[in-house]
Amino acid sequence: MPRLRVGVIGCGTIAQIMHLPYLRQLSDLYEISALCDVSPQVLDAMGEYYGVERRYTDYHELLMLDLDAVLLLTSGSHAPPALAALKSGKHVLVEKPLCFTLAEADQLIEAAEASRRTLMVGYMKRYDPGYRHARSLLPSLGELRYIQINVLHPAEAPYLNVHRLVRTGDVPAETLERLATEKDRLATEAIGPVSQTMKQIYTDVLLGSLVHDINALRGLVGEPQAVEYTAIWPADEALPVIATILRVRDQLRAAFVWAYLPDYQDYFEEIALMGASGRIRIQFPSPYLRHFPTPLVIEGMQDGAAVKQHATVSYAEAFKEELLHFHRCVTSGERPLTDANEARKDIEILQQILAALNPPGLGGEAKPIRLAAARS
Image 1 (cartoon, rainbow, N blue to C red):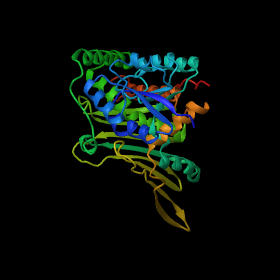
Image 2: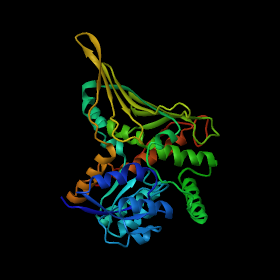
Image 3: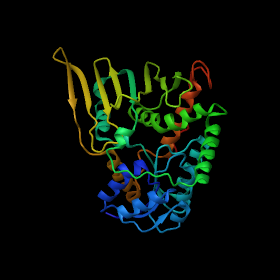
Image 4: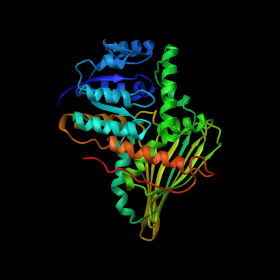
């Protein structure tokens, strides 16, 4: 199979824990040809560790190289480097969130179509073997009655400290100020002139975490019809509790709670799908732990008895499966399972979750979700 020459833009936490190790492990499919990061010390450390000589602090310089693809693993909106990469003829795998605003998403969709290059968004849960097996079992539940999604998020440090991470404080102050200003501008464009705390909730919690579960929900049951209710408490905390109810269909609701519980070190994330005669629970591990399986709890009736089965489908790592899918898309022309159209729909739903805040903050009433049709 063809070996892709890739440049990695952003060498921070998720690059060091997941993407770079699996790119090296998949050395028959990928060659790490160049690295880019705004931290010179992180850049040099990763370059030495992975034997990559071409290193840049400006992604525009990296994009001038003769590469097949780039991985965009920076924080914040990925629209500017993704647009530049597509225009330079590179295929792109971009970490979530794709971007902050719907206008950015539209630009990226158009650029991917015009360039005829793959633009894939890193929703690794969609490639998780446990998730995919659960999806295949859904017809056995018959008509769904209720969906519950719970994310109980502890502080991240204990999960990060088990890894060999290089983190420094050498990013130039003017770079940090420029990135912060741009982040604030885009958040305002996306959700309006709200408080700084609300902007941070939108960019760091909704787009940084909830987006995974919204996308996973859509992959299981399709497009929700409306956001019926949202509450956030405490309202002045950037890492609060968020509760929302989505109308998936006329007779099906999804209740979603994301709660930051910093001091109890047990990450818990579950999508539970309830039918009249059975249930399937998908229990995701912390995204910072490698090769932890996603167990399933499958419940149903058997000979008049309620039966509960626990299934471990595979120890294959979702991030690695994602890279395998990206390679197939680039080399065969297969359309990504999670493309920019998918990401745009997620961003639209997250914005409407905030717009349905009760008591009213940005809205306060059920908002019909009018998703743009996916472009073929």
